[in-house]
Length: 416
Image 1 (cartoon, helix red, strand yellow):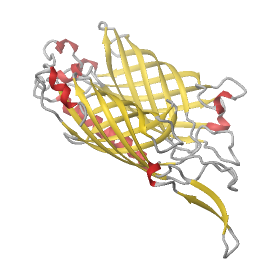
Image 2 (spheres, rainbow, N blue to C red; image 1 turned 45 degrees about the vertical axis):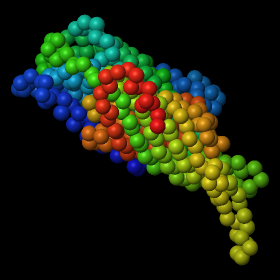
Image 3 (tube, helix red, strand yellow; image 1 turned 120 degrees about the vertical axis):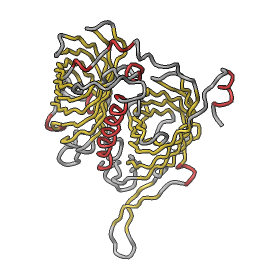
Image 4 (tube, rainbow, N blue to C red; image 1 turned 90 degrees about the horizontal axis):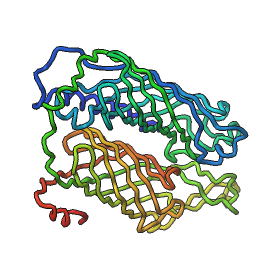
């Protein structure tokens, strides 16, 4: 899990650079010597833990939780047309801690996460509908242990990824104070890098109090002046290469092994190609092909006595090479910003080598452009919308298409 800590550093750098770059553009007004608008907020939430695995469902009492978070962030100023094209986005860093129904088994986790949000709909100067995405790392969990903590089959590691998505109403109380009321979902998981990994899923209604610094630096009145220029529709092509690892459960019947969880990480390599229709500043979509080599496919294990020393050893034998490959076709949607985007795929494996996983799969992740065409990705591949197959880091390249002038040009650009 150590490599996942780099996620916070990379996204923080890209988020910071995207806003710095957005304030001074060729379409911006002359610089105004005002303080950068930023905010400090306190959030309280509490509800039930969603019963998405046996550990939660079979509890002797209602699986509740309560949590608080402290966030520091920066607003867009309205100094460029990009601010309004991307919904006056804001971003920052937050600290989160939660108390669960079974502290003895789950612990008291603390998260450090990055967030980004913006307008969905601005009704007037006092009311607006907004969204927010959270992504980071959580620590201080009490993981599964066959002797000391056998009940916690939800999480197999003390450090886990923190993912959240929220929708809320913003009420402007005065020039300094805002009140947010909304609901979201929060997910904790290690992406099958260490089993068991059923995951923790939270329903998160919340109330947030926000104090604004330098709010006079934000000017919505410039919206008419900075109307986004018409977007020239085009088709982009994303090529993505992935290296990661995972653990799997194995069939131990008649093998002499004590448990189905195999304490071994298997390599996973992936290559994907996506054709993305760019019709808006805020989103793009298109078909994608995912090709995956999974070393854990068809693996067999058993315990065997060695003829020379008479000792028992655990044997691991990979499956046939052809069983390690999968090829899937998915539909991908992506919410885009200046240098960061969030995406989701829903796909089906046409060629399915790993019988341990389901053919129908889902992918969610965050994408950050490090250069004009080079991007990094952090994502989760799952099945049944709840069972993580693996977390992954990827590096990719975007081939930007030429502007389309005729609709019939779409026909020849779907897939090679």
